[in-house]
Image (tube, rainbow, N blue to C red):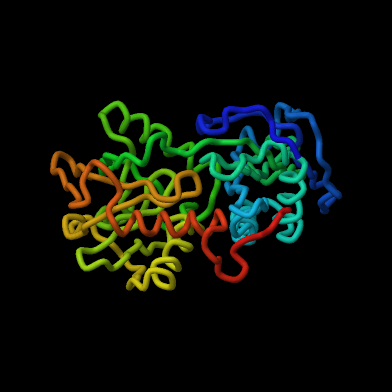
Length: 341
């Protein structure tokens, strides 16, 4: 199939409206059959639960053109499970996991012309989302819901390579104990917006959030998990009940252990030990790994030995290996790659 006439190599990371999107509605206790539509607008009552009580969640994954010409997605079953977990926590009806994967396949195939070609550096970003659609005036769950998937072609998150980021230890809390920090709810991201704008105004790229109870343990940023590398090449990620279970982070830990033969550890990471690490990165769908060069803790600057010019050597290996799996250059573990076509 002929691709759209886009400058694939120079796409930014932003929204471009594509031809089709998937929609399914929950009414009278059940999800309907779902359909593809060309209508990119959403029409809701002014009293919809999503507007007033933030009953909404989302996921993010990508479709890739592999080196042998197939179109694939990466571990969509984990996105389906995470969205189901989030929906249950927000008292929304989970969209069935098998139908989630089927809907992803449908919408990607329907927009095949928008899937960037192999070697362009671009991918098709897939955004499933779920929200309360019926009128709610009292504080309670909505009775009706809508599940949608949109797709948009995006370029690499970092143009010209991944510049190491400058972070600050935030004075804001991202999530409370026993709260919603471990689900992908829209409200979590709304709460992070003031903190990230504040960080940008102060000359930083992102925040490092600490645990809300003791403010001694590293948790995550507004939209990514942390990954650290020790000076003897052990890969460490923070363990907490109030951070999002990143699919990219889990995949990178498997890559570190099974592909690169590195020791891995998930444990509590204290802010006081940041200076002991050799490398630091942020893990997420958009960039896979974003390297971190320094963290400013209220005037005390911790600079990682990997520097401010490029990724550290272990972080680079992790990035190259995982993207190699996603693009079909390396053999994937069983079940990681879902072939769309």
